[in-house]
Image (cartoon, rainbow, N blue to C red; front, side, top):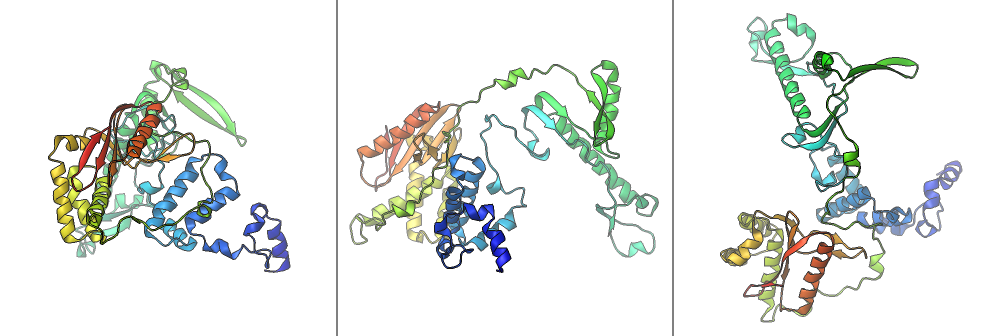
Length: 438
């Protein structure tokens, strides 16, 4: 790095924001080598603290941390591998991993394609660009055509650009058919878009030839005699243009301004909880009290596996698929898997247990609840129906009063969030599985 570049970089605001503790002592314009020892999650969390991005609980930063956490479960955690992986999925619009999910009753604007809202309704719908193409575009669209005329009858079909010239060629029939099908598809799309609103529909349709705007404008002009239609001249960048407006019905904005949302299954935080946890961590051997040579070791190990399977279980029909997955991951042996499968299936024969997997209830597995004190609670299973909640926690080993205290704590937090607690259950996964209603 030459002197000029060093000087320019040292005056960079980003460089100045980085604490001296992260800079290289010997080479002033390089980061300290220990920074490169961080895995991707630790690095990002450190950067969040350095730039004070944790002062506000920004939903997008939290989601980005969640993405990194999910990525780190099965992938290499160095920076380059993560960036390469992110490049492969960032353009996938169907990838829910990159989407932020909101409860349906959240007071917010939802952005969606017309295709994705088929069959759904919303109070207010805004269509900002109702001017999509309704005909083939020769510079963009390729269609397959065929002909019985020489020499084009030598092959069953040809891919060609859908230019207007095809209308006067031996491929005219295929061209016109494709154009008609596209028009029908777009009319169906327009129907879907215009029938999603319950209370109000706002359509912004810039004028453009051979687009859906032509159909909308034709229909609106026929409604002029009913009133509610007016024009105004606007100016932008020394250019004048006409804004045509058509309205029908009464819309009362004040009805929505003061609308309140129902309580959601989470408590919002003012800041992101982040600390250098590794400085306070104490590492000890897992299952220190249980050794392979102990009599209860196999029973406890089996209880852990049953816990893992039940934690993933949404519907009873998924039991075999989940156990098969555990076998593939080499977490279970064949003999043990069969025993566990029989044990879980017997459980579902009891009414008390099967009711906890009732399909009428929405299931949240290990859903995180953040309290106002910043504590994260994670009940094993929460069942939701309207504003009713059932809480289920699986336990391994002997009954303990602390388990009751813990599930009561979950119930208290959810109750404060506006939910009615209709059941609290502790399920002990010992040799004889026991269900206790608290």
